[in-house]
Length: 80
Image (cartoon, rainbow, N blue to C red; front, side, top):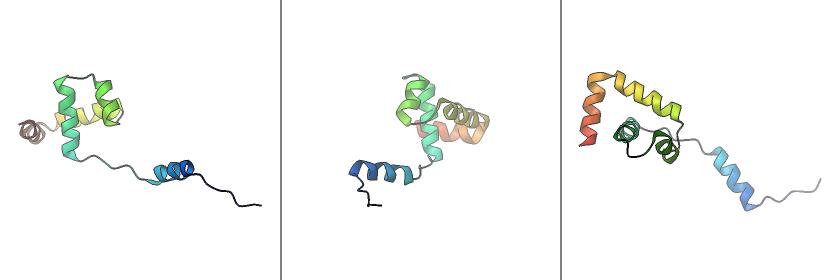
């Protein structure tokens, strides 16, 4: 067998596949949910910009709204 030569494009694809996805922090999740509640963009557009699925957005929204006092205080503090 003769050795194959990899192109820079193939190397880039391999690097992308190896790179683990960063998990958003609680503050980032709150910011995204607040952006959705403001209604400036549709949820679909917001999710596309942030690189998340709509299901993830609605789960975060439900999680934060379900945590009543602590989450609401955090959201109001970050909103200011």
